[in-house]
Image 1 (tube, one colour):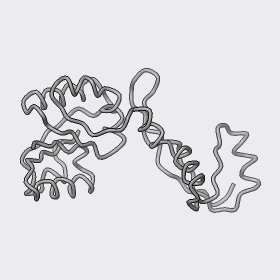
Image 2 (cartoon, one colour; image 1 turned 135 degrees about the vertical axis):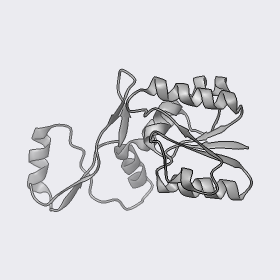
Image 3 (cartoon, one colour; image 1 turned 90 degrees about the vertical axis):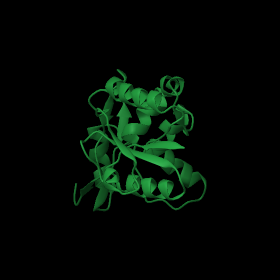
Image 4 (cartoon, helix red, strand yellow; image 1 turned 30 degrees about the vertical axis):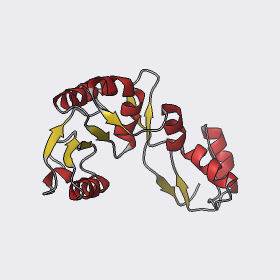
Length: 180
């Protein structure tokens, strides 16, 4: 089977390329940059440099469609939210071009990528979670800071988000605050 592993510069992409090739698959590495860690693996059969989905989801999708039209039945494996979100939102376009995808329903993926949803689910199942406060505006932040023990970890609700206009937006990385 042909498999295109996306986000080739991620360590998990390198491990995925190696593992899948070891069991006999033909594995390609895709990345927005001109090279990636996964593409340097001896287990990698080829590469695809695609346009960054941050710059243009349409161009990103067109590159994947062209790839799977050349290699029908290729399984697309995204490694991060950056590529998973557009694949999920536009799955029909990719499937009709000949791609195979293993993705939960789009609404379920959005819930899984939402840290607040994940935290609530874990708590409801009895999984121990750190004290968590959802803050939606600066006034709430000021009030919460009065009651918190520092240091604290500040995280966006999701790492990547699809905006209302259909573009990707990076929400940010975790930050650490030592005081209010």
